[in-house]
Image 1 (cartoon, helix red, strand yellow):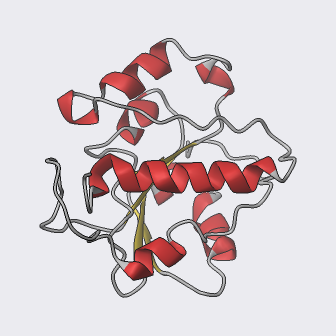
Image 2 (image 1 turned 180 degrees about the horizontal axis):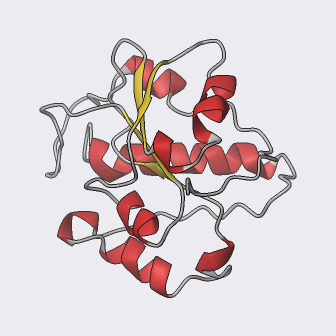
Length: 172
């Protein structure tokens, strides 16, 4: 057991919950949910996906949403990095941040030490959702209770999943 394994496990858990919610809807666009491995070794999984993308060619991608280290939500503070990579992102994030509201900190370009940077390098808009750094990233098996915050478990996937019909494109 990797209690509190925030780096990979929390994003994967959020991805699975988003997939569960999307399975009940019929989004206007194809939504591809992908979990990458090897980010700490040089974005191995995301780089492979970008250069060998299936089932859709990478050029058909509208945006990449990265959920990396989202398990330690404190004081409802959620970072949305890359908000400057598409003109539509600030208004879209604001419109989706409904009750219970996050203290949403939207900022930045698409560069950063995670999988989204590979997509940004190929001129795709990106958002990296992140609950910020902390001192507990469990890489070794442990015993005991999870240290992932109760607040985070309740709300990390509660950002409304809606059939996005916005034509999202990179900022020129």
